[in-house]
Length: 341
Image (cartoon, rainbow, N blue to C red; front, side, top):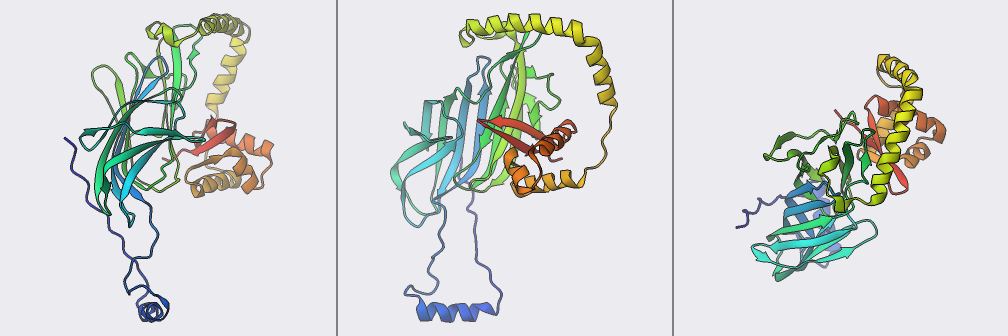
């Protein structure tokens, strides 16, 4: 049974009181439409109470379940509605419109996939419909890395959210694989900090909530975790990876023997360093990231702030070490994310 639709959100035009007579006279004089006619161009749909559950599998796949209420805010009836998923390798498991099972089509775009639902009956203006879809993604998790002991396998989930339509009340829940744990190789294995965490008895769960996202606004969620290497499905790993693990362990052991004492001394000195405040250039970077909605490509930063690329790299490295920003590679670009308290 589908949940009850959320209440509608109203909007109204505002203008200084003295302007209303002028506006009314102009409307009567030049507009062929009746006074009070709606002429504002709006989005086709509004997404409410959107809930995305991502179940991480130790073999690198991710099972997504997306539930959302969509409301027609266009002046005409809609026969199709769609949801954007920032993944290029999706397989449909099942889907519903209301309580009816359907088969939406997946339209792969340049950087995302649109899940398009055909409606049995046209969705009238201000009417809402409940959508649910379950998918399997092969590209939300990073390639695996094995620690020097060969006992743990590390992976990252990087989940992007870039809606085409306004989204109200967004919730993301991720569950680690069975026997999975947060990565100890990262100082900040969860980004941003979740609003709550727990367990379902088998896996660790983490939850984030975003009250509102405007079209095109970007949010990124990152989970870095590890699982025991022996618990990974062998079918999900290639023989090359096993060979890589052995070679990595051998070279890492040799490196620790040769460089271990120096590295220990370096880390001791590094941990003793304490940073207080930010420089004017660092504050300019923070302000620019805020203007960009909390993230932007690193190249845009040094171009917009007129800072040399080499100096920008040094500034960002220092800020990242102090936990002010995070950097992750997205294709050929390196993205910079502001870490807000």
